[in-house]
Amino acid sequence: MKLLASAIMAGMLCVAPVLAAAESTDFSGFELFAGIRIDGATIGATFSGWTDDSTQWVPFRQSTGGFVSGSINYIGRPGFGKTVTIVGGKWTWLEADDHTTHSGPVLSGTVQWPANAASSLSANCGPGVAVFTANVRDNSSGATGSFSGCLNDQLVFPPKIWGLLDLPGAP
Image (cartoon, rainbow, N blue to C red; front, side, top):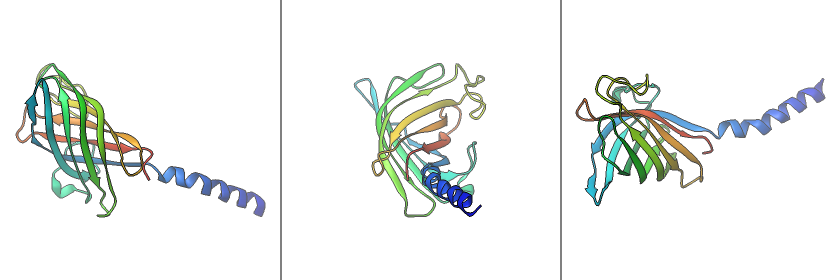
């Protein structure tokens, strides 16, 4: 029996580091700058916000203590019925412990708007709200992951952004 218990514990110790390797957080925030259009591309659209534990946009008072920010470069025109292609950018995440940071390049992605203010692309986003996915890399660990979520930039000011940052291989 002791041998069986030791084997189970050894197996758990081998699995535990893998389970602890995933990093993710929900976030909410605002689009701070729409970017500058140069030669058919928009450069530097900037977003910033706070970590939270909701799949919906929440105010800062519901923050879990961390911060996220990023800027993207994209090709295309935003707006109802349109999709833009993310072609680069950068991002950072300060975890709630105030010392663990992740940052790196935005590699690719898309932002897609519904056909009009009354239509939806996602139940989490709601009517008139765009959905996005941005593929990212963490420079410190080399892990790749994504930002995904909702951008309400057609119906409210300032534009709101919320979603999930997921870095499956980050320590």
